[in-house]
Amino acid sequence: MAKILCVLFDDPIDGYPKNYARDEMPSISHYEGGQSLPNPSSIDFQPGHLLGSVSGELGLRSYLEKLGHKYIVTSDREGSDSIFARELHDAEIIISQPFWPAYLSQERLAQANNLKLVITAGVGSDHIDLSAAVHKKITVAEVTNSNSISVAEHAVMMILSLVRNYIPSYKYVVEGGWNIADCVSRAYDLEGMHVGTLGAGRIGLGILKRLNPFGVKLHYTDKYRLAKETEKELNLTYHENLESLAKAVDVLTINCPLHPETDGIIDEKLLKKMRRGSYIVNTARGKICNQEAIVNALQTEHLAGYAGDVWYPQPAPKNHPWRHMPNHAMTPHISGATLSAQARYAAGVKEILEAWFANKPIRNEYLIVQNGELAGAGAHAYTTKM
Ligand code: NAD
Picture 1 (tube, rainbow, N blue to C red):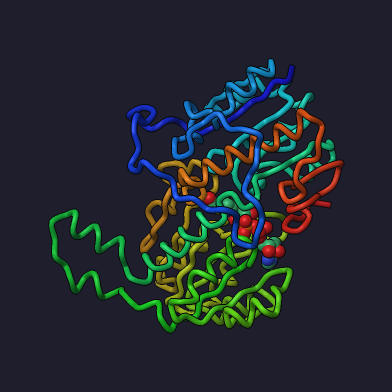
Picture 2 (picture 1 turned 180 degrees about the vertical axis):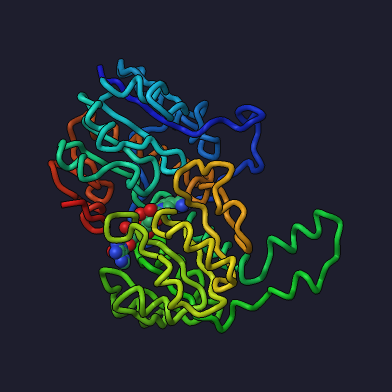
């Protein structure tokens, strides 16, 4: 019998939903790029229901309990007295979502003597000390692709929201006003702007593809250059490095993982190289941007706007400066947690668990760490500390 410890975000304030906004779920047959959808032998949940909160349990309880495993689900993960900290020592498998991550620092991993598998329900495993996981030969897997387009859509929404000055205009309406001049004094067309992405993997490329019909000029930088046909199809300008990209664009969107190479890479020095009036949209990880440098660039009006849904730490404290800086369009970490995405990553977690308990290989594209080294998607996107 294995003990599986799952950390999920809290239920809605008014309780677990009894009904939903829509009766049907949009359906897709495969991911962009061709990867097949998660294919567990069965699922015990209703796609379209809230699965990522504590009562949703990622739809795994009946499956795990039928096999005789112990399944503990909690949102209580802060401090040494939390349920997460108390249950950690003998858990064999830990599951959490990046939206409400079970932070697994080196110290915490040192306490988890029985831990063999860590699953990210979603994409992005930086809440786990990957160097320590490599060292301890813990397998780390995530549900690659499950929410990439969810995030790409959110980033496009935020780019338009900033450039068109949507959020302040909406606020005027709610407050009973009709302040046309106030609204339009900061509004521009996206058409004709230069938009670039740091990282052109699944999300970055998804954003570029979605923006192509808007009549913008598209740019990117990445450790790996895209195929020539893709560059041609989207009329992309490739930049050898971030500095070159930052100087060339009006809108910078950040879509690389957080790892030693990218931690704090958007700093004061880089921001100064960007054009005055640029916008940044970061749905990757908060720590890729230097917190004070972003606040300062907005206050001095060097940046015209900043949006994103990723913070450090998460949840952001009430006095986090990004809650109160000018011209921002921040949301809590939600872009990859649509009900559509939740159904895919819950099914993906079940697929990973089925493979694990049957001693079968986990799909290579789901792997981040295996057998004491970065593997699969992890070997492509991450680096570890030496
Ligand atoms: P991906 O692995 O498909 O793409 C990441 C790309 O970043 C890769 O092409 C990689 O080569 C590139 N990269 C890595 N280090 C780089 C560097 N130093 N300089 C330039 N490029 C670099 O991953 P993805 O699915 O596109 O996701 C990207 C990131 O987005 C995730 O790691 C995660 O942090 C974040 N994410 C956020 C949410 C959310 O809800 N906000 C959801 C999913 C993923």
